[in-house]
Every structure is written in structure tokens, then in C-alpha cells.
View (tube, rainbow, N blue to C red):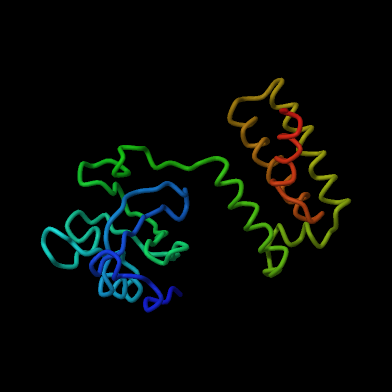
Length: 202
């Protein structure tokens, strides 16, 4: 939980810039201003609320359009005078009807998704929730997971040669999931693979 009292509101006449980022895609959506009351209301209601400089009042994003920003977390910058607010939008954020206030499409970033999947697998490994297929793989050990990677690789090759695009993509997804699971089981991650790829690119 962010500590409101440790933020520097005085630098900008009682306001602090709040950069809004989609918690799922990491896409920057918009920028608004918050005062203490707006931030406090955001934390209490879990609906992102700003301070309107033109109207001189609080306003909750989505109260007119229905496209609310559901608060996930907030982080302050190194000077404690700017916020990064992660939220989940109900729909387009900009009043012009676009996903972001820069006219960009808010869609899943493949690299971000894979990092989030990796984080989920690490969480499964640590917390061991009952009934999880991933946990069963971890319990079976590296040899079993490696065997699954081999099986999925063969199936991916077969579908690439003679299957449909849909089946090929499904097998590719299975292969990537099991490969990331194997990396996680060995205490490694996507970052380690990327490091090797970077070295090869030079």
C-alpha cells in the first residue's frame, strides 16, 4: 500500500501527476492529476479518481462513460512526486473513444504475456496450490517435464508439416508452456534465454 504522507504534493500546488498503465498489457493509457483526496478515494474505492484542474473537483474515470479504471496498485517515482498507477480498464480510456490518450491500441504484448506466464509458474512452484497441473509437473521432476517438452516438440513438428494452422498454434502453445515450466523447474527463466540470444546477435 502506498503511503500518501510520503508523497510530495507541494511541488505542484497540491497535485501529483498519475501515469495510468494497464496492469495486464503494461500499455500506458493516460495521464491525469491527483490530489490527496483523489488518491485516497482511489485507494478506498478501487476506482481510479483524479482531480480536474479545469472544474476544480474530483472525478472518477468512467462515471460518465462507464469505462472505469479498476485500481490494482500504485508506485511512486524516485522523487516521490509522480505516480505510476496500474489499473484494469473496462473499455476505451480516451474521451475520443480510443484505447489510450495517444491513439494507440491496447492489446496484449506477447513479450509481456510470456513474462506474466513465467511469473505465474514461479508462483505455482512456490505456493503449490492443490489440483494444479503445473504443480503435478513440478512434483514429477525435471526428467518428466523434459520428456513432455520433447513430446510437445514432436507434436508441433507434425502439425507444422501436415496439420491445420489452428492445431499447429495449439501445439506451439503447449510447447512454449512446457518449455517455460522446464526453465522454471531448473531455476532458470526467459531472461536467461534472452541473454544467450543477445550474445548470439552480436
